[in-house]
Structure formats: structure tokens, C-alpha cells
Amino acid sequence: MRGGRPGLIGTVARTAVVAGTATVTTRAVDKRMREREMKKAAQVQQTAPYEVQAPAPTGITQEEKMAQLRELAELKQMGALTEEEFQQEKQKLLAR
Image (cartoon, rainbow, N blue to C red; front, side, top):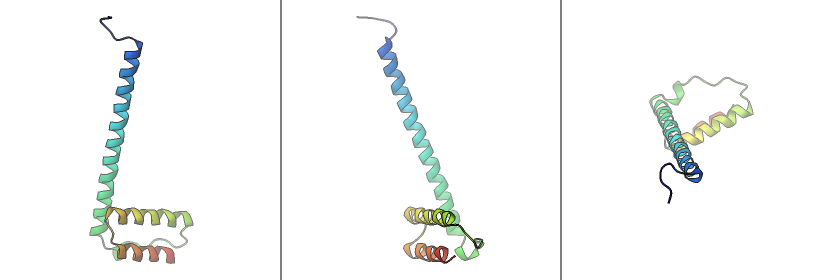
């Protein structure tokens, strides 16, 4: 039996555990930060009526429409928009 410091395999195993733990922790922190930002955005959306928002400029590109549709879908999925509100905003966006 060997005493003292761990061998090469022990050191590699310890390093793998530390690296794995750091990765999981980083992802969890990032996820929490994204959730907080989305909640803040949802609260802003709820406090400001849609009619008060400045109208989007005309000549919107397809890519911009798709990005806005994705954002609306995320808000609906988070519960910030009802199905009815989602459909209304979607129709406004598609009418541009």
C-alpha cells in the first residue's frame, strides 16, 4: 500500500471531478441568470400595455420577424402572455 500523495490516476480522477463540478455549477448559474432576466422582461411587458409601445419600423426583415416571433413564443411559454395576447401580437407582427 502506498501512502502520501495520490498517484497519476488519482490526480486525473480528482481533476475530472473538479472540472465536472465547475461545469455543472457554471451552467446552473447561467440558467438562473437567464431566468431572472426573462422574468424581469416579462414584468416589464406586463406593466407596459402593448398599445403604448412604439410601433416597429416598417420594412422589417424576415429574420427580424422570426426573432420577434420566437420572443413572443418564449413569453407565452413563460406565462407572460395568454394565448389570446400571443395570437393578437403574432397577427400584428405578421401584418407588417
